[in-house]
View 1 (tube, helix red, strand yellow):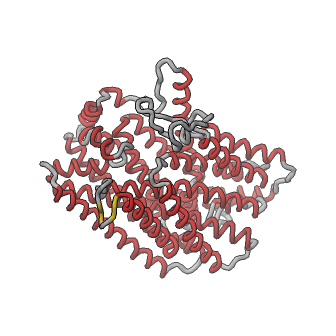
View 2 (cartoon, helix red, strand yellow):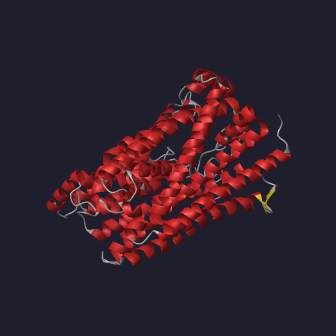
View 3 (cartoon, rainbow, N blue to C red):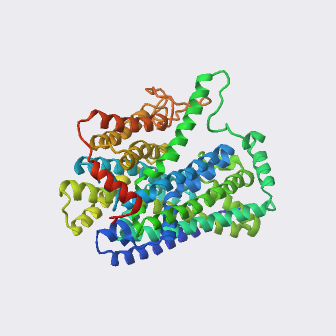
Length: 561
């Protein structure tokens, strides 16, 4: 059945109404949370009243970003087997996080810096931790914001030359970024951790529900025969059996070029390391460990997150291969070359198959609204992590020497949310037409290179000292940023067929000297090396008694807040 312009307009209106419905619900939750937020513990950690399962759902919601839902489904639809490797990296990361969660919950109070500074000199460590938290969060946040503008424009069907609510495509994209930014600022400033957590829970339930429905419909379309689904996807991809084997996207073999083949394989290993090691150091994930009453609940929450995230990533197989089989590569690429609209297009295709044009438009609108909810929830978590670190770590313990009033800290946290959110909006509007997909991988790489060494060595190395913490954080951050700046991501990568630039800089500008696009393989060891050398080369003597106190506290929970 052909889709008429009236159907398109109706589907666009339905999507817009669902967007507004979600916004209305979450604004109501934020108002309620504001009335029940009375101090720093409420604002930073939601009063520690969330149960393990509740926090586990929120953790899964924090982690399952638009990149997870739409990006991975798109990669699988276009690259087959290699796309699922992304899912495996995201999932395995939680097994490492499980090793740290109880230790960090016992040792800290609100932020990563609480753990790092327990036996170190407070000002330099908390300053470094705050800088790392804001840097990682802003890079991750910028990718989400730019993606929001492009994605919502695509989901609403806004094309160049068309108008939407009286706006052109470019203006609509800019307004989308501004609206998303304004909402995330409102959620954090007024709802704090309580409001943000409930937004995450609702978003996670919607996302998992949407994935279950869509996966079930795809499998039903193929008679619940996975083999039939995979065969149809391989046939429609034009790649035949190669679609179901490794090598289409990551670790490509380049005939006659052994060096480039090696670089491709090392680049994939570098990406995998960043995804696996970075999760335990992501600021917005770490702050969630402190929203539960004790370490047992923290471990329970991570177990729930592992189960939900694992189930979700298994469903991305059905979404990705279903899109390849039912939508087709040509239609996916025509809508978005990166494949980010594969899942919504799949929703429309299976909805039309089972219930006609109206069913397709309703399912498309629902999946589009879920994607919008995903973006809003994740950016709110990132802003909250940044504002918490600036207020609690830098203002409370560096500027106020650890003696601020709670009301002062919370006021600074709200102001920080406004400033960080405004900065993110401005940067995203400036970068709205750039390909910033690499920023997500960069955020994971920086978290793994800067935060993970400091956390690991603080908990387990008795000799570790203040200089080591600061050197590890700054060394990991700097190496990640420098290597990406000197990589093909920024300059020197061109399309071999068209000659068009595939880097941030235009064709003809080439100053890259680092061959890989992902810095983790080098920057993560660099972060650990800087931390170790900083410790060994400094004259500072570690406090053995405090290390023993931290070990007992982290392992038993004695003295935990």
